[in-house]
Image (tube, rainbow, N blue to C red; front, side):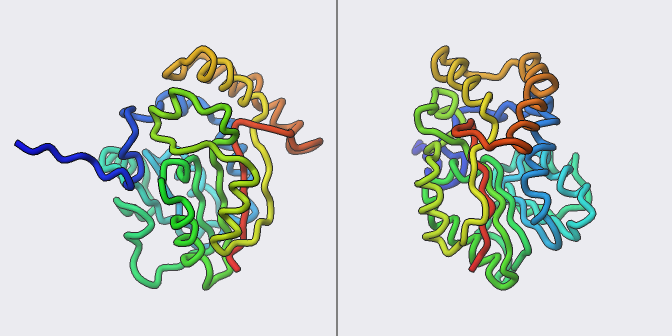
Amino acid sequence: MTSTSPNPDTPNAVASTEDFEFAALWEARNYRNAIVEEFREHLRGEVIEVGCGIGQMSMEFLALKEVSKLTCIEPDSRFAEQHRQMISGAALIEGTAADLPVGFSADAIVSINVLEHIREDVAELAMYRELLAARSGHLCLLVPARPELYSPLDADFGHFRRYTRGELRSKIEGAGFRVVKLHYFNSIGYLAWLLSFKMMRKRSFDIKQVRFYDRVIFPVMNRIERSLVRPPLGQSLVVIAKAV
């Protein structure tokens, strides 16, 4: 019998985890709300959510009155099925952005912790630009930051990379976008990831720790980051870019 290897160019094909810690991440409600606030100004009209998973962020986007239509894209059939069971009011495409109908366009694309799973990330960004160009739409992007944080858990998740600011800006501008905003996000998360997953080499999240961090530590630090000063480093990078 001949075995078939997964296509390494399919998102998540090189991941070795089954659920991407969805149970623990359900607890991160303040974290999810903070991401929405980063992008809220540009989440309006017709929105595409790339890599929607089981719908943890989809429900947040559907709650925004400015979003008239949400199209969710998910390549993993297991996650897509859970999304169908949990989320109503959004269109779901089981596949990738390349599976959208010819001529499809949107006012915004939101991609949260997805681009790092895609080997050919520049080609992916160029595809997003084509989908947004007709409406001069915006890409709302969050990705893991700082290559020095790359850990066994990143490898388990199927991450090809963690981004530097310069690399991300160069790739986004090279794909035909104008960067509107680019900054680090979740500075304390940088230290937490460094200790737990890089130094201690943990391979999973602790639900109780996630809940404590999200309820007690994250809201205070996020308020400081948003109202006083953006941090010089962080666990993630936030980008808003306009298709030109």
